[in-house]
Image 1 (spheres, helix red, strand yellow):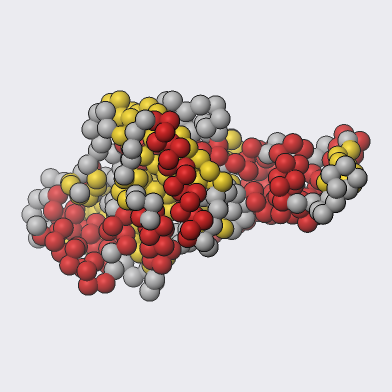
Image 2 (cartoon, rainbow, N blue to C red; image 1 turned 60 degrees about the horizontal axis):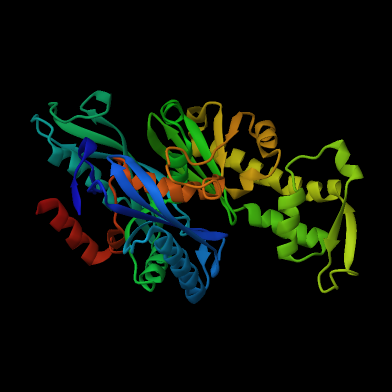
Length: 425
């Protein structure tokens, strides 16, 4: 499955023209499957979309295998029906298992000889031995640059001469147990994971433009169960992080504050919610159905200002968490003054204005770009991760990819034997 690619990284073969690519976004609020047909290298057209309310998944963790299996199966089946195609292999996002970023430097001797693909591969493969924790499994290895003896900042050392080759790597790992659980759940739907991509990486690919990736920017995906953050610079993903708060927490606050059900709270958030208030909110009255009461007689009335205050308090907490995470990442300067917001919760009115005030940066709300065939309903910020998975499948990624099978068996004796076979045969 692996071959030699850009900068000597191992990666999956790019899909051929006319082939089918399927992406599965397993989130806390929804499960979405998108099927696309490759028109030409790097370009594809969406031919099928299916999505279901996520069941059995909470805060990025599978808590009920049977319910999660049902939601995944239904989403994939709906996409297959629309596309008129049957899929078996999927590019799947990884939001569970608390993905973590690590900086790693690998050195290999080249003994004064010309640097070859094999030397580069050996340097990158050393990342498989990174000790990130007892229950952590490698998901991505992204080369950020190379050095050769005293020369640094080299993008492609192939053909150069030196004695020691160094590789600066961004390594992303996640909990082995969570990965195994996700793979088992998908396998029970008679599907196979072709590769895994961490959610913030996918969202960044879908929403950032090339200049933002090159000059430095952060993509912030405010989802239902949590918020993911990716930082790109010089065209590469250099850091990922997360804040364990999202749109579902806003809904929960409304349900408690207004003494209404979660269903009604979600509806009120969508119809009347805002990340910032205005003086006119005090004059607008909203009827709120009460829990356990008859719909006609069991309603209370509150001002829109009261509702917005609840929403704003939680959105401020989420944005402050984002600001803290970026400051602690070590890459705050790389972000410069550019933040790109996406995800379902970013669509709340006035979110951009509130984010600009709290983050003190230029902020724009983004939806997936470079995607043909997505309808208006499926092309919004809530579908950024799924769209990014497709882009990752058809582009030429510079990271050392790990297939779904390799992710699960990357540790232990079997993993070491598999690694030796890939490197020496």
